[in-house]
Length: 152
Image 1 (cartoon, rainbow, N blue to C red):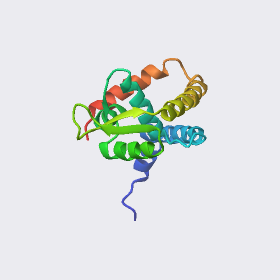
Image 2 (image 1 turned 180 degrees about the vertical axis):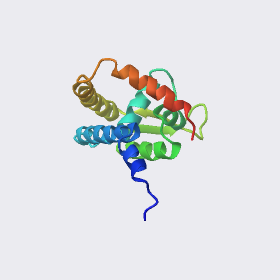
Image 3 (image 1 turned 120 degrees about the vertical axis):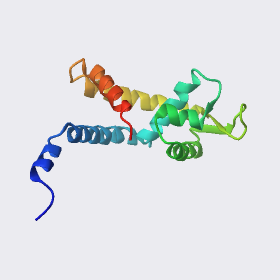
Image 4 (image 1 turned 135 degrees about the vertical axis):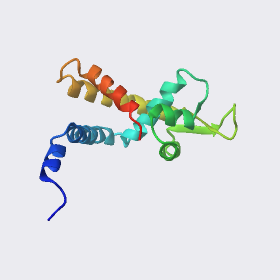
């Protein structure tokens, strides 16, 4: 006889956790499909947008700054940045403040690709979320604030 209790499994399958996972999976699949036409992944888009966003406030952007701001672990950010650099979407060069660190900026091609991606993502955002109650973004912000207080 299985040690798994049917009631536990049923409770999990009907849980907010499972519903959120299903929502996220469907959202991510649709986002991935839209960005595919630009040959970009969503994490690559996140990195490009974060580099540009940070450049509006800072004279020098480092990989560590990007990883923190994009909420991506440093190793993943580094791999994405390396790929974007190889594709001539990002420039990587020794930092002025610390030559051992890598500073980043978008290339002209990177700025153009980011703008194309922003057009796609903003349209998707409008098309999808406008179907829901206007209070949804605030509810998501509240949920995120609570989730960030839980430590693992």
